[in-house]
Image 1 (cartoon, each protein chain N blue to C red):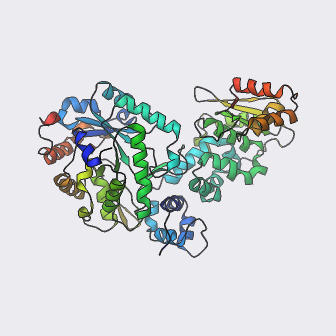
Image 2 (cartoon, rainbow over the protein chains, first blue to last red; image 1 turned 135 degrees about the horizontal axis):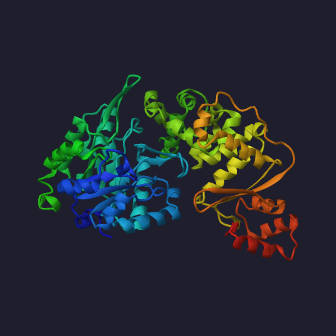
Image 3 (tube, one colour; image 1 turned 90 degrees about the vertical axis):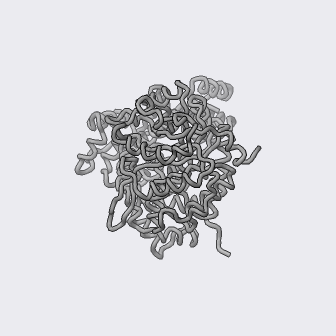
Length: 296
Length: 258
């Protein structure tokens, strides 16, 4: 099998896209991805579909895929470092979902999506423990999911208010990507949370990342909160994107030589509210994605 | 050379710390925490306790799930006692052993409250088990997914159904308004054999069944070699030359599966 850096050339350039999760579009005032594509084609070149197998795909995601429009599959329910989590029933359901969507690749937060078994009331999302011992199990899970689905699997740095382990998050994910021979999804908002939580500047640790493996970026709003004197950022996917997130996105776009996609995560907001976010993101990526999709 | 860390154990302990401030204090303190090595504990001791409570609805959401699946048990023991599940060894076992929170609550936590609950806890635990049709199972001949047998004091099913009616169409809402546990006492004597089955529409069917059938299915809750179940069937009264055929019938009826 060719290495990822050889395989990445076959991945399509998707451009600027938008994300959704099951039922997100049904909430009052929420974003309708198809309407966004109709009204602003260059903001919705593809849809990142958040999938929790027990919930399945909603009508918006199915309709998008049925039109043959580009999409990616964002998993929301696999602890990649737990071999027991790859049970046959779940894998079969993932393969069926992949067959419906025909996504360009799979991606998702490489963290703890559920405690205990995969069961009702046990879903959450915690970042990985940033220690050397966590690298191989995570990389093995990525390779296993890639083999099971026949699609590239891009791990994403998860959000968090608590980060454990002494390795820098970017070094950790760089090691995971190399060990799993895969690409990366860098969530700029999640990275901004990490950098703040650890007292780092937004671009600290950038030299430790294999930027040629970064295929996708996420940009999203975050809300600064104060609890008992602790300042932290809630990953609310709102309309207020932190300056740190924009700074990270700008620097990442300049470095990520194999960048294929940028998602603005804002699924629970009205289109009119998020147009400024997409406009700013479009400015950042216009040069990189010139000649592809709606940028052509 | 330092001992290798197990990141999964660290992460599982972190989950318990997020649900249970007393466990977080234990990890930070000097007392024994046998599930963690000294190195793993050192990683967790560096956590700012304020960072553990940034999601202040985490425990409430999990409690909601338990109340939804165990409404009558909750009415009998009180919501505060249910909520203390998240501070229990039973909850930590669920987290550390990849278990089901709802099943751990019924099978491990409610056991200590059996005198108060009588057969009600067993019924709701069996219902929680039947709902989990997709639960992975070990090899052997055993109860089919979605089938849960249970043996309770006589009259418990009728008592339970009345109690559910009393809680109304939104039991969780009713429980939040409950100021103290119900004083009512479920039946304590005699025996009633029940079979709970998951329906295709997601609901559950509860009904009585023969003592022999329920006994055999209870023996088959942990899948085992067919020969062992043949022996159990004979012990429960099946004719020796018909026990095999009986198992085939139960497989055909969807009550047992390989």
